[in-house]
Image 1: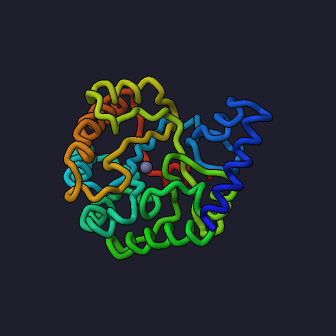
Image 2: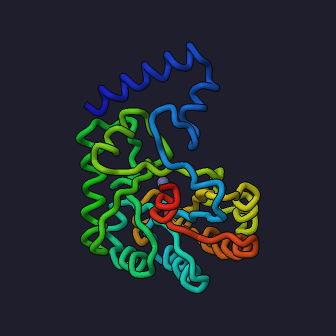
Length: 251
Ligand SMILES: [Zn+2]
């Protein structure tokens, strides 16, 4: 079934490429695109707020490093967690929730949702939600598709299951490639404006990092960049909100 759907998508993508050219495909897949259905991309432009989000964890000790920065700076963020890592490191998610941070669903194993059928998408989101409930006693109605990959079908399934799909407005900083923290921070800070949603990575696609090569999981640059970004944006007078708080500002 998954294969079948992939075939349909491939054919549709090829047709789109042939007819409209690569620009149209890029437009559809860009994080801000609403071509395949509504997603949250940013908050209100008239509020001096930003939302920090972290994908692909939990990944101790780096997630704990980020939490220490957030606690010290007294700001809150939103963590889009991968289910298999939640099941392996529940205490980290418990700490996120205890701190007042928000949790979002980033699927069970960071799979590419475009190749899954409805029941596979549902299972991936539900397994992850169950792991979050077991870890922290809370459930989430936020989801972010891995790789930002979505189409009308994926978004329809997410909404059917009660999720709000959340994208981002600040271009990805490539923090997973471990550039110096100052480079990560500079790449983010130049694009931040009112209502921005920022993405950093505290893990690597939910890999269980105590069983992986250390270089695959090193997110020390993201930890250091988080401190730089928070300090710089505080200096610009921004208030940090979680994604649920950002959504309430929209209402
Ligand atoms: Zn991810």
